[in-house]
Length: 210
Length: 210
Image (cartoon, rainbow over all chains, first blue to last red; front, side):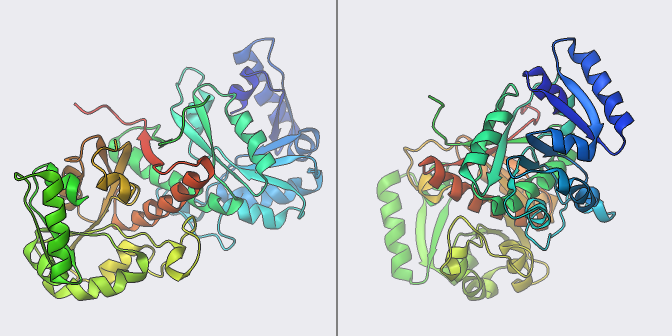
């Protein structure tokens, strides 16, 4: 996602547990993208403090800890975008099955951990990370965006559509993230059964964009 | 679905709580389809006894009762296809939200009520019933088929693909029906937000059919 968004002209900060690792990843990204791209690396809490939109993509096993590590750095003006999917792999299970989360979804779990006024969305669950990382790979998937704020949905949908061939879908309230997250488990199972790597999802029956 | 499958050449029996209502519906279907279509109507348990593939599409509030009313009529050679979606409407809630089902999904609830050897699949959840009924409407959706038996999936996928423009997707085990069913609630919400009636879903990234 870093490469795609930086390529689209966004100023991207890569967060990492260690400042140095963040800087190294940023350097690698700049080497791929060339001089016009703005990518820097920071320790997670500093990255969260510096960014306006915080996109958090971590394995579910690290979800709660990671949120706790940045919670002090997120201001009420920021937008927090949760990409986490509660795959059973977090507890040694299969990636094609999902865990039930007490709050309903990973995104709602995040909402419980963050201050009440935080602008929270969830998105990008159904696009394979490897496809986003490989600029040569054509993405063929919608990104369903959920948030309790329509304005936050609008901003995140706009961000997602900066990536070529991605169409953002208004997924409604954050609670709907429970369905969108679980679709990822279904797609991972489909990948296995069809021997593919990039199964995605497109919503049909919508009006063409004017 | 009756019209689509009968048009594709399948011999269709419409089940109804009352024999007469089934016969009336069948007569209407024959009037629409013309003389070459084979559609008859029967009381539910007789319809289930006569059919090889029993497709049950009922509101979730009627799901358990309906299964109980046909359970004696389903033989181990039959295939039972559950279309039910546990929408919250069953208990007076919104159609864009879903109920949690103790067994995991409507289809797994059915599996608990039917004899252990019953061949059970779930399918057709994400295609709008009105689109199936109106032969003039073009369908643009995949049908994700779940079953614990690969052979049953194959048969039901073949049946689904008799309907023009439907592509069947191997959804894996019956337990995955919990995800596929819930997608319906998401699509109903998308219909409302986008002011459309036929939002559907297509899986991307699969090999083209050879």
